[in-house]
Image (cartoon, rainbow, N blue to C red; front, side, top):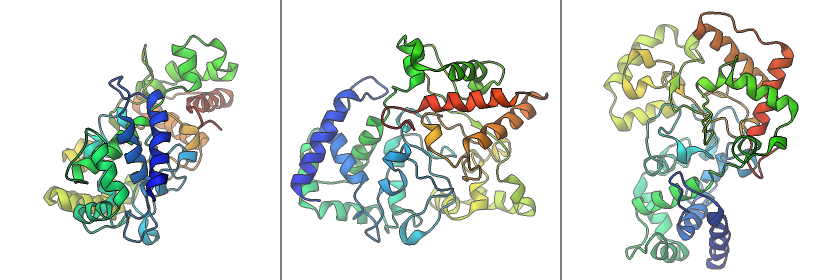
Amino acid sequence: MGASLLAATFAAANAFGDVSASRSGASPDGALVALGRSLFFDTRLSRTGKISCGSCHLPDRAFADGLPLAAGADDKVGTRNTPSIVAAGASQFLFWDGRRERLEQQVLDPFTNPNEHGLKNIEELVRLVDGRDEYRLAFRGAGGGSTTGPSPDGIAAALAAYVRSLDVRDAALDQYLYAGRNDALNAAQKRGLELFRGRAQCATCHTIGANEAPLSDDGFHSLAIGLDKLGPRLANLVRVVTKATKESLDRLVLGDPDVAALGRFVVTLDPRDIGKFKTPSLRNVALTAPYMHDGSIPTLEAAVEHEIYYRSQSMGRLLILTPDERADIVEFLGALSGSGMRR
C-alpha cells in the first residue's frame, strides 16, 4: 500500500471517526483508526501474503464471513464460526469462550494462529509492519506519536481503535426505541419486539435497556451445541485442558474441535461451564449466517427454532409460539442491522 493510498485511507477513516463513538462516548482518534483500518485489510501481514483480518471479517457481511468455520492461510479451517466484530468494542469478554477481556489483548492473536494469518510470532508481525515506510511514518503520527516505530502495543492499539470505531448504533430498533421514530419498525417487527421482550424471553440474554440495546448479557450459556459429539473423549479432554499452559491452550482450542466444544470451561475449569459460550450480540444478526459457535445452524429461522427449544428446557415448561409469532421474531431480528448493513 503506497503512501498516497494510506493517506486517502486516513482521510476516509477520519471522516468515519467523526461520527463514530467509543463506549466511553469519546470520538476515536482519527489517525489511529485509519492506521488500524490499513493494518486490518493488509494481506501482506500473513505468512502467505493472502490473508488479512478483513478476509474473515467482511464489511458487506457485517464483518463476519458467511462460512460455518473460519478459513485462513492455505485454506486451513479453524474450530469456530467467525462472529461479527461490530459490537466487539462493547463486550466484556472476547472470543466465544471469553479467553480475552480487552480488544488490545485479542487483536494480535489471529496473526500467530496457524489457521489464520500463520505468522511464527508477534516479532515477525512487527518486522513486516516496520518494513513498510508508510507504516513507520504512520506510527510516528498516530496515537500521540511514536518515535520508535511499530511495536506490538502500537499495532494492537491501532487495530483496537478501528474495531471500536465500527460500533455505530443506528439500526431501526435504535431509531424506534431511542430516537422517537415510531415508524422505524413495521407492524410485524413491533409484534416481534413485544414477543422478544415478553413471552419468548429472548431479552433475558439478549438485553434491551432503557437507554441502549447491547443485545447481549455478556454471559455464558449452553445450548448443547456440539456436546453430543464428545462422548467418551470428555474425561480425557478435561484432563488435557486442565494441564495445558496458556500458550498451549490457545493452540488446543484453535486446532481441536472437541476442545473448542468445551466452551467457557477452558477458561474457568469449572465443570458447570462445559459447553457454555458467550452470548453474541444480535446486532446485524440477519447478515451473519450461519449461526452458533460452530456454524452448525444455517439460517436465522432455524436459529430461532433452536433457541425456543432450549428456552423451553431452561424454563422447565414448553414455550409455545405459533408459526406467525416465530415469523414475527425473525422479522424483528432484521431490524437490528445498522447503517449500510441492512438487507
